[in-house]
Amino acid sequence: MKTRPEIKLIAKQNFSDNYWICVGATILAFIVIGAASGVSAFIAGLGALLIGPPMMVGLQYFSLWIYRGDAPTPTIEDMFKVGFSGYGRKLGGMLWMELFIFLWSLLLVIPGIIKAIAYSFTPYILAEYPNVPATEAIRISMRMTEGYKGDIFIMSLSFLGWFLLSSLTAGLVGIFYVNPYFYTSMAGLYEELKELALQNGVVSLDELA
Image 1 (cartoon, rainbow, N blue to C red):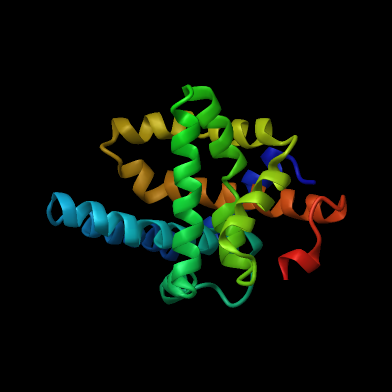
Image 2 (cartoon, rainbow, N blue to C red):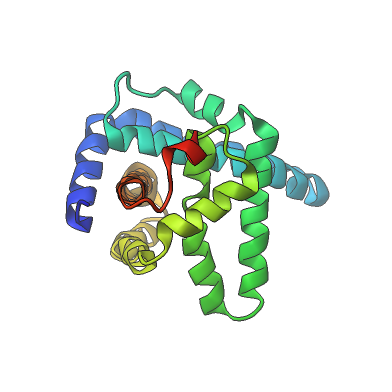
């Protein structure tokens, strides 16, 4: 398995090689989510609920595509196709994930964080393996992250300085650098831990396919 610095180096290189489409995809995803959330109180809540989760599935899989360096380079259209094809399954998987995180967070902040990390691979699994049922994607994510939650947390924490800098620039650094770099790095960590899980028999290709 690649180390965190190695994953970030690959992410940075591949993101830089596809800079404008990565920035554009991230901006557009958040514009769509923001637009769905910005009508009226009830409609905004419903819009965010129905549009946001699949949009994030599409964005995170787009980032995984960039990390892998697969040809052809993904397009904005690909992000939408991945996010909204099999819509009900992806929406259901993401809503179950968010519900479980919310319920664990009611116990205290730390259990909520731990479960958020445990479930964090769910959107990639929903996108990459269309035959895996929604709730099963959550269970597979828990198995893939078992024993590696600290690595995932540290990867996120390594961007803290960047996010602070972004806040000082009214989000501009985030828009044009940090956000796509962060998403590509997290996608890279998923890719490495997935391959490790397959090698160690934690998950099998049969259950994914």
